[in-house]
Image 1 (tube, helix red, strand yellow):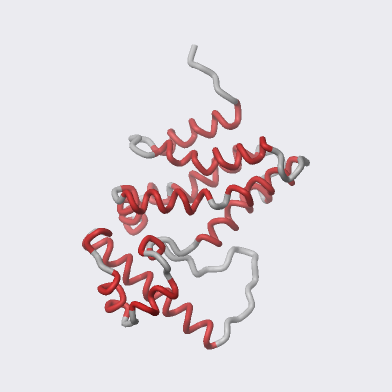
Image 2: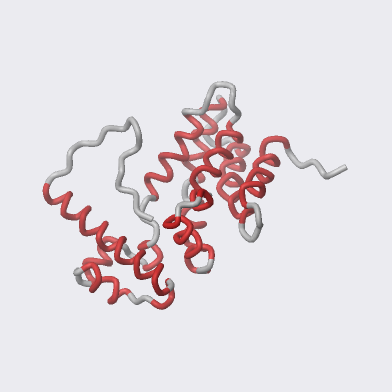
Amino acid sequence: MTDTDTEAGTPSAPMGRRERKKAATRQAIADAALRLFLERGYDDVGIREIAEAADVSTTTLFKHFPVKEALVFDEDAAQEARLLAAVRERPRDQSIPAALRDHALRYRLAGAGGDDRFTAFFDLVNTTPALRDYVQNMWLRHTDALARVIADESGLPADDPGCTALAHFTLEAPRAARGHGDPRQAISRAFDLLENGWRAPA
C-alpha cells in the first residue's frame, strides 16, 4: 500500500511543481494497480492494463516501479523510519525486543483491526507467493539499519553480532504469524523467545 504522509513530527520541505506531478503520477499508478489486483488477483493483471488504467505509458510506469511486485509496496523508506523510531522512541523502561514486538503487532498486523481495505490488502499478499517473498525480502533490507540502532541504544559496537542477530530475527518474526489462527499470539510468542531465550515447556 502507498504511504505519502510524512512521519509525525518530521517536517518536510515543500515540493516543487515537478516533484508534485511525479508524486501524483506515482500515486495514481499504485492506486490503479492495487484496485486491479484486489478486483482480479495479482497474477491476472498485466503491466499494460495497469498503465492504461493510470493513463500513463508502460515506460513511465517502469520509471516509478521497476518490478511488478513494487506496485503493491510503496513505503519502504517510511517503514524503515517507523521501525527505527520504535527503538529510539520507546519508553525508558521498555526493552528493545518489547518495543519491536509492539511495532510488529501495530504495523505488520494492521489488517487484523477490521479495516476492510487493509484486510483485503493483506489477504492479497498472503495468498500470492510472489508478493509474500517480495515483502519479506524488502523487509529484511532493514536489518543493517536496525542493528546499528540497537547497538547504539545498547551502548555496543555497531558491528556487534548479537545486535545483528536480534535485528534479523526481529524482521523474520512476523513469518511466525503465517498460517496461524491467532497471528497476534504467534508474533507475541516469537518475541517472547527474543526477549527471554528458549525455554521448553515443562
